[in-house]
Length: 167
Image 1 (cartoon, rainbow, N blue to C red):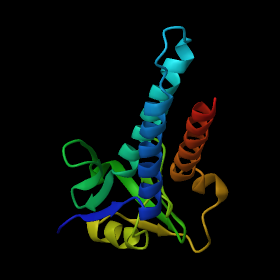
Image 2: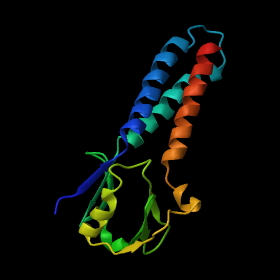
Image 3: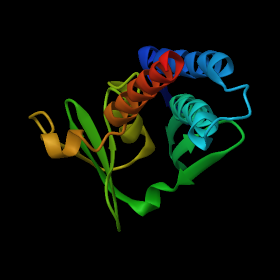
Image 4: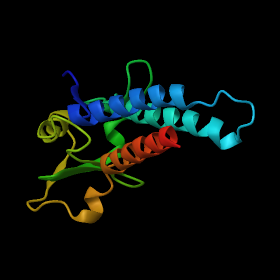
């Protein structure tokens, strides 16, 4: 069986790409060229580029589900967890929690992965037991998906980058 592959939604990838290019361009023009500057004026542009680079790296990662396990990462660097380490996949209409035998569940939400509807099919094909939940996932489960936090971080980074340009 081939692995089912998932990636971040196009809108999330575009936001991360925009923030990265914006941070690079603004930092290039806002980077101080005088000798009498403070350390914050040097560190802040670099920090903004690094945060935007982290966002683009996270949003470019792929999630693959197969009979070998669940793999998250890129072509040359990835992390795989074998299916034998998972107890089940708890499926809600708007979230999936992959529950390990030990540890905390890994929550997948539509804001992070597309095509989200195919996740259920991928876990069934991989042979992981499912626990279907008819109602939407509770808020405490949905907020465990990292996408909303990453998007807020990206927008805050754009705001800091803009403030850096204006000061």
